[in-house]
Image (cartoon, rainbow, N blue to C red; front, side):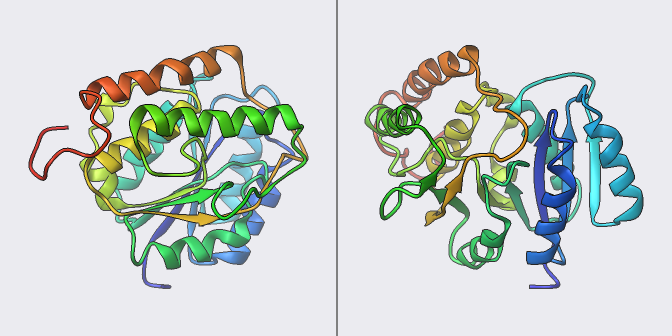
Length: 248
């Protein structure tokens, strides 16, 4: 697929130890892909490192934002950037190697038969390393919570390793996406599902970060709790997408 334009969007905040190796790994596994780093004015100097990388490596692009605006707003800015250009496949991916770049070609292969490909930690078993049991239980409970309330038939709705066809992003009105933390992942998948796009999960192995620190907070967790009810209400608590042609 060397003639198909692929963009990997990677938000960053205090990831100075990770950005160079993750870019090298992505380029090794998808040498024709471009990377868009979106940095929220990291105080650890990540932005300056990204500027150096952009100068030296033409496949690396950088978007600087003025402050820590949140995961969801970063991705939406990246989606808009991608749609202004002719990228056919747009990925979401973390900078910390919890998402293995070696999986990228498999996502693209799956995307030939799907509109949205989700990397699932819970498809065909549990594939997570270096997590305490309490965090695993919380993550599994969150996945069950989302499925019970919304009816969305995915095993890992909170995961952040994804590949969108551009047609999916073109169909989703970003101004209606209200979540900004990790619940943004649930809302974007829900929006695609509501529009009857084909969603396929592929099993991945998730390894907790080896450098930097987690950005999870109490505010992000609370947002995730209520946003699921907001999505269910938006769909009038129906546990399936509306009929073709209906407004979502």
